[in-house]
Length: 593
Image 1 (cartoon, helix red, strand yellow):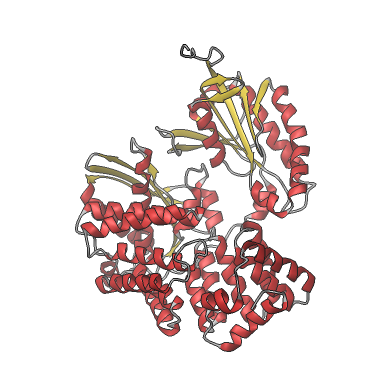
Image 2 (cartoon, one colour; image 1 turned 90 degrees about the horizontal axis):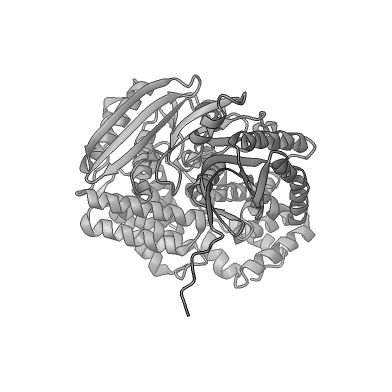
């Protein structure tokens, strides 16, 4: 049999590509699947004819997305503006929480036609632009903008060169505003500025020739955030919220409003061989003015000196009164080799990926990389601390083979203690130790460790300290701690809402706990704790029928759960009255003893 010939239907040509999808579609489906499908069909019945009306062709409408091809960029942009204006009008008639908003990206480039489908970088760039656009917004590439800038009257903002995921070269991006999105403004009101200098450090663009070097740019930013956070005179936004803007084309003024900060640090990193070039600039979000900019071209092993220089400069600008002693205290112990730090950064990236996917393969990868770091430098505290966190996380995770395994918890304890012994000024080490001690029921020692981490870095606080306080019987303080975490991290992890709800439940503030839990189970419908605590809360409020329905959902997800087994071992309250308060409600809704 002869070899098949190349498919004659494959055609390559230049085209304008429009990519669009619905913001928050999964959450809408989780809340009301039938209505969401119906609403989407109604919207598409209006939107899709606009494509053909602007001389375009719909290529794909998989799920909530639209992929369309145009022979003219002008037609593509006009179509995008018409779609967004139409959706603004349609959303005005829909109640809060049920509106659908499109993000749209437009690019012009070479594409391959194959049996009615499109492939190639022309399509990929359009998809990345769409993912980075604001709800109700439109982002177009520089190549597309050149085709329309003299032909259309547009409200355009140049967002500069941005590195897009899996796209080899940075792309210049322009934002086009169809109409202001009132629903988005209502959903995200501006946060008030703190009473001290405030800053967010955005992800640096990876300008290296290989996209897999992105972990290095991310690690540099993570370290700058950590070092700035040590200064009590500064208010520093948590990494999780800063990284929500990764790859997104957003005006600095908007970032200032959404995060409630006066300053933003942005930059880029390019690795070439054994050298690295880092560029950074400090921007005033109130005016958009640049307060400081610098470029560093150094050997890789000098990256720590670059970080120190940047931190010192920023602190001098934002808080000139910082004490010299405190400035000196910020210098973390560097590893003995660049390679140990490199493996550490890759391990941190893999561990962060676990929390966004809950894929245990990322946890295993993180451990392997952190162990490689320690094989090179057996005295690197940061690797010990992060490795300890992977083990205590596994102990808490029902999907992990080491769930509630006492040997794993002991291993986490050993690693966390080693991290503290090696660097007593490292907040991460004390934080890891605090979380391990809480799981070991050493409540007072746990709180002391968390407080030590916060004394070294006033911005180093998250939901784990809240859990420790709840277990120890101080849920009132847990509410304050978690609310502080939420302000430092406006895009906080979903689990933060659960911890705050648990704290409210424990002090019998059920009406405050209820909306937090409903929001949590909407975001994490397959994660068990939300359903059990929601059932207990509803029971305490007298809604037994709804409570038992949530208990059924919980048992469907975790049929092996028992109150005396998993329940007591995971929570392990110090005060028997707290245990009775929670577990009596779980018994009432039908969870097994």
